[in-house]
Structure formats: structure tokens, C-alpha cells
Length: 92
Image (tube, rainbow, N blue to C red; front, side, top):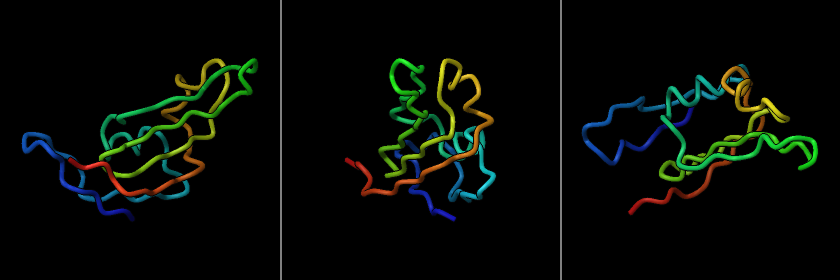
């Protein structure tokens, strides 16, 4: 269970915590954290099939998913997370 910082804008509501269970999917995580500030990966075989990742810089949370290849982002919402990285958040 990760406690989340309150949103910077008072008109935005979101969960106060997120449970990172082994079965948590991209949809579960984005539902709790909102859209990520940065995301990438999912390139095809020519690029080495980099898995997709999402980064919530204001929370200091980066999640990598077990999805790669040509349709990685289309399947990402149903894909389970693989790596969770926590770091000092970028707050103004």
C-alpha cells in the first residue's frame, strides 16, 4: 500500500492510497493515480521490444508493465505491472 500526496489542484480528486497487488493492471493503477506525466516504451522488435512504462513525477512513482511489441499500448490497460520504482517526488 502506497500513501499518495494530495493533488496540487484542489479541484482534482483522487485516491489517498494505492494498493500495488501482484494482479494490479495498468487500468487499476491509472484509475488510482490519474494520467501519468510521462510514458514511453512499447516499441516493436526493431527497437528491442521495450516494455511500456508510466511515470507520475509529482508522486515519485514509475511503473513498468509486461507489455511490448506493436500493440503494447492497446493491451497495456489489461497488463500486470512488472517493476515499481519509487523516488523523491518533483514538487514545486
